[in-house]
Amino acid sequence: MTEMYRTAIVGTGQSVANHLSAVRALPEDVELVAAVDTDETRVKAVCAEHNIPHWYTSVSAMLAAEHPDIVQIVTPPATHTTLAIECLEAGAWVYCEKPLCASLAEFDRIAEAEQRTGRYVSTVFQWRFGSAAQHVKHLINTQALGRPLLGICHTLWYRNEDYYRVPWRGKWATETGGVSATLGIHLADLFLWLLPEWREVQATAATLDRNIEVEDVALATVQFENGALGSIVNSVLSPRQESYLRLDFQQATIEVKALYRYTNDNWRFTPRDSADSAIADCWQIPNDISSTHHAQLAEILAAMAAGSRPPVSGLEARRIVEFLASLYKSAFTHQPVLRGSITPDDPFYHAMNGIPRTVNLP
Ligand SMILES: NC(=O)c1ccc[n+]([C@@H]2O[C@H](COP(=O)([O-])OP(=O)(O)OC[C@H]3O[C@@H](n4cnc5c(N)ncnc54)[C@H](O)[C@@H]3O)[C@@H](O)[C@H]2O)c1
Image 1: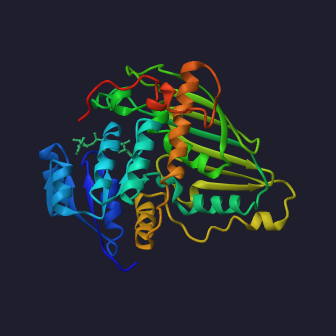
Image 2: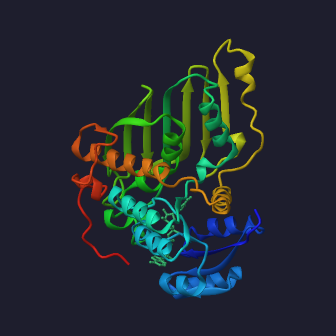
Image 3: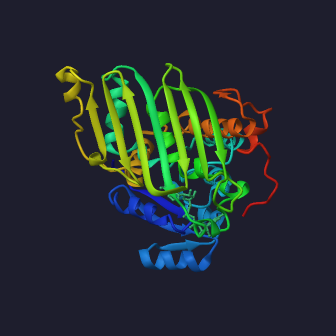
């Protein structure tokens, strides 16, 4: 890459550290020119600590003064769509935290703004970008392991009442969903990206042990277009925490056990009994890149240099939004939901709980 791109970070709360590390890891490619937060004390403190040259309390003011090439959005979920569209309209690409938006309707507004501006939005899904996941995707694309038949995708995490004391969490209007939309989304995105297109989901969700509006546990059964079956469990009620993904192919089982990040060591490959040596040998991962924000940012900058659509944008990003809308519709209606069946005349197109938002967001 030859060009040095200019980035700005919007939102300097808890998760800003991941984005600061991502920029720091790519010193030849990108420089951080500004940070924005509506909380002036916080943004000033972060800029002072990390030598960020300019701070702002308004995204519009930052865009007008700095003209960044890319903006990293790290604000609460319900603010993402408006901020992302404003950045696109100012000529910037966007690297936006998950969940990208509150509904399919919002996703389609972002897609329309991409088309209008010629700029792109990539959702942060760092789990796709570790070398092991990339290798699994390669094995699947080359059909090295036969057909995928069965998948298990468990996000069994623990979040106490303190976690939900942050005002935007736990509410449909501001968190935009529960554990499935904000935490299980990482592994579920990886699961749906690796396997063939999903066809149908049947889900159950409940709020069992936290004082919140959204679900603290959800279970889903998924059918894929090739006939494979999958099971997804998302929980914030699991004291022994684990993220566990398992894919059973005709020729081998692939598993990853980790919590928030993996390296190659977290993955395990088990060929079937008496599999030929070509199968056993295919688990040679050429490098060991962990699942970080910077691995994804590097690919976005490479796409910018090439003038092409970045990863985790467009239909590649819509899949998980549609899946979540369908999971919630199934949980609320107690009916299976087919991919493609949620259209603009459906209340679940407009909000994950089927009830359009009525509050004004910051
Ligand atoms: N990819 C990951 O691994 C990962 C991990 C944790 C959180 N996240 C995501 O990161 C996002 C932020 O989470 P967090 O825990 O840092 O939240 P946080 O509440 O700690 O910080 C959010 C910050 O955004 C600021 N803000 C709110 N609205 C704003 C606006 N319109 N303009 C500018 N600043 C604004 C707030 O003042 C606050 O400082 C969420 O979408 C969350 O889901 C991602």
